[in-house]
Amino acid sequence: MADVFSKAKRSEIMSRIRDRDTGIEKTIFSYLRKKKIYFQKHYSKVTGKPDIALPAKKIAVFINGDFWHGYRFRKWGNRIPKKYWKKKIETNMVRDKKNYSLLKKAGWRLLKVWGHEIIEHPEKACRKIESFLRRKMV
Image (tube, rainbow, N blue to C red):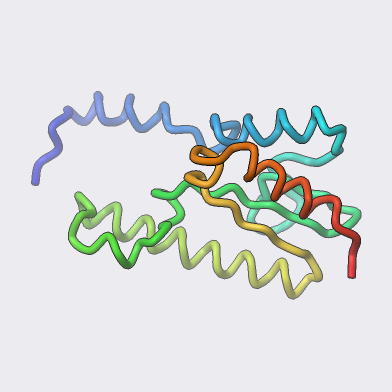
């Protein structure tokens, strides 16, 4: 199936898709700041660049967009519009799994939160992340 947009228009549309400081991330960041929780955002000193990190405690939170990170990907079936997207999402999923494994082996505790969780129940998602960040190391 041919793209309904010209190459230039598609490029413009795709350039507007943010990989950081998205609306759902801003919701969480704002909540955590109000709760006076200090954190590093998009922490680039470890693999995977966690969206939220407490490096001293080795705690990381990943806020994953449902489409880009393949939420229920196997159930999508043939509804993925192009082979390119299927390959892109599968690559993202493999990369995520590898990054999570490397972080865990390095002693990091991880929490993954899906975008739809934040959109559907923002207060609940915020409290879940806050609770995870405040938990004492075991």
